[in-house]
Amino acid sequence: MAQYHPSEDLLAGYASGAVDEQTEALIAAHLTFCPACRRMVTEHEAIAGALLERESAPSASVAGVAAILNASPSRAPSTFNEPPLGTLSKIAPQPLARYVYEKTGEADTEGLNWTFYGPGIKRAILVGDEKGALVRLIKAEPGAVFPDHGHGSDELTLVLTGAYRDQTGRYATGDVQCAPAELSHQPIVEDDGVCFAFVVSEKPANPKNITAKIVQRLIGR
Image (cartoon, rainbow, N blue to C red; front, side):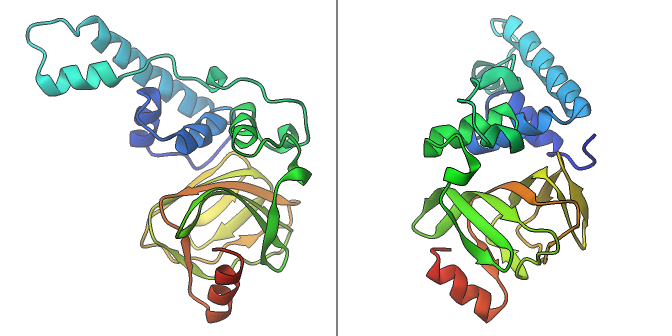
């Protein structure tokens, strides 16, 4: 069972359909690992359903009506269709495998556009902009050490296989690290096999080391 989870605000946003598609995919995948978060999402869906039943009540505020109309009950991992069979399905739960397939057209992990991101570390960019990678898959070998880096924005990381640690804790399969923008850290992959992770942020990471900065610039951040 997962030890680290999305915030309650994110789970509530997922239940009401108020998160972006990449965060939706990350949370839906986490729910396949975490009964506690599934129960919390169900509770938020029940609240949204109750509000929908009351949407015509005269006492409802303008803000309350807007929230009701934006609500979308019955959010669950089954929201996503099953992707074609492929090796991606061996490392990623169905909701995330579907998201990756829709973004890349690839059902096999080996078919993704992996690029060097450091010794023992590869990255496949799924969504980016002119500033760099915003949504990506990471593949890191046991013992790999990520460059010391900060964040231009809050960052969500879902561990799909293996585990890594930093000064905030140990993150294993199913865990979600919610890294605030001000966090600077240097994750180290543990000896639990290859670590695959799905990472979402509004802005790219910001390496502290000059060599890492040069590498990131060369590979398109």
